[in-house]
Image 1 (cartoon, one colour):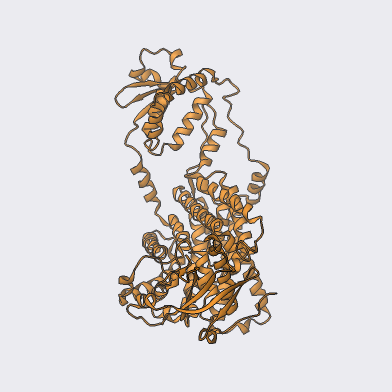
Image 2 (cartoon, helix red, strand yellow):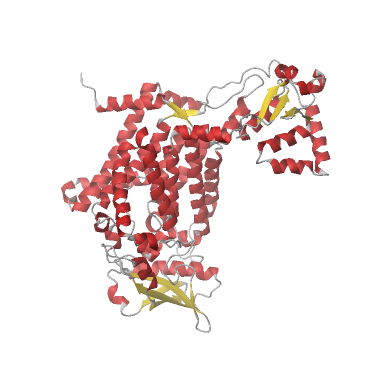
Amino acid sequence: MAVSPLSRLTDLLRSVLERQVPATGLGAFRIGYGLVALQEILFLTHFRPLIFDEIPYLDQGPPMIAFFLPLWALAALGLILGWHTRLCAAVNYVFWVLFTAFTPLWRDFDGGFDQMMISSGLLLIFLPSERALSLDRLRLALRYSVPGHRYELPRTVPVWAYYAPLLITLAPLYFDSAIHKLFSEHWRNGLGPWLPSSHPYYISPLDLSWLLNIEWLQKAIGYTVIGFQFVFPFLFWHPRFRVPLLVLGVLFHGGITISFNIYPFGLGMLVHYFLMVPFSWWRRLGEWIRLPKPRLKVYYDGLCPLCLRTVIVVEHFDIRRAVRFLDLQTHAAAEPALAGVNEDQLLTDLYAVDAQGRRYQGVDTYIQILEALGYTRPLGWLLRLPGIYPLARRLYRHIADSRRRCDAACLAPPDLEPGPLAQAWRDFLGSPRKKAARLAKALVFLGLLQLNSTVHYGLLHRLGWEGILGPAAPVSNLLLSFSHAFFGITPHALYLADHFKGYETIFALTWLDAQGKEHWLPFVNREGRIVTPNWGRVHSMWANVAVTPRLSAYRLEKFATKVIAFYGTRLGLDLERTRFRLKAKSIRMPAQWEKGLREWNLRQPWHDAGELVWEHGRGRLELWEPLQVRIAYSPPRNP
């Protein structure tokens, strides 16, 4: 009897669910994702009036934005620290969906970055990333450990946990993007990275002219990017190809991060490559960090709950394994440095013995622990200071003398039964076979949604064949809206020919003081570069929406008004009494390679193109000739 494709997929997934690998790379991915998310939230906080106000500081947006952003930041911080990891992942996902679906982010400040973060953010809710580099390991160990029974989260995860973000987030993104690139002339000419690297709006302060002026190298990079994106979905899981793909991916996205001003996208892609690092590398890293032998042996009362908590906390943060804890009842008799100390004395203090056989007790033991850990050595020095040391001894003595020892009830193993929600989830997943089957169905569902996006917009739309969809076209659009908002599935048609062809004019904004001297707003500089910190979303707003090959007076006025209101207010300018100039200069965006194009575009002179006049709290753009004839589309203003 023939086996269905779904059954084969189920069997394959069951094998990757059963194979266990170290959790370190998954923990590093979670931390990296959280850091990228946190910086983005801080960016949104800094530019909150520009992004969320209709007119910054004058026509304010929803007041709850200022309340939600700190909550979102706390969730991102929880992801970084691994504190209540799954809950923080869920909160982060909800906020990312809400902000990108119901605020101006979706229309005016989106560059594809959000969809990647939504997709991987959803996966983090279900992946066991708390098993490495997390405070959840410490929290649960403290909660469920008793003398004689240490609780630890597993240090391994199913290999599927590594494959999931690569298969569901990176692979479709790459493949979809590669298909779109085939329809772009400058990408077909091998100049995909070269052309945006020559556009003043897109470049970072790092001058890479020497690299851009090597034609054969630029074309080699361009064609390699397309080939890499096509083969990645089919080879990333194979051990033989992991390191080459890892190296290429880090080079490509590292290059994006340092050469373009869309660093959040570059960093967001880079953190996924923690999942491509071979598992043996994580093991070797751990072996390299750990000391050959402990610097300090610490003897503690094995029947003391407080002592056990101390052991758990120190061992959690002792990444170099510099301290070895031994219970007095079992090991004290074999330690020469403790000879002559009777059992009653041993039970009153925490004792330590260093590599030279010197004995310490009480607060001195804690000082030795802090110094042995290495990175906490300054805290040990602090405890030695006159005035602090006596206070520390007194506090230690009070705690040590009031601690309790375990009785029979205390020694009973804790109840580890899952809560009702966790149990319901386990019941839903069922046996390993059922878990694999449900995962297979989820992958098929996501695959169909991705296929809808890639076929409709990557092929039919590019070929002009959308008409063959007929009545199915609205359904396809509806599915794309759904998958875009909740799963991060979207067309990745970035930096293609239809974006750069005809992109021949760029703009900047200046203001005149009372003496008529012209000053540049801290936004676009004299070279035409968008200056820091106006990168990422703000760059996308200006370079992808306000200014495009098909100029729109409406969009130009709208976003010039926002920029002037934001920076004018921050500079303390009276908007209605200050003259604001719109500057324009010509650039070239050819589909064929030209030596020195970046420098040529940066050197072009500026011309006065118009003024933005403030009246009754609103900006009105007055364009001067000959720019007016270049404006192709100017929809009526909103009432």
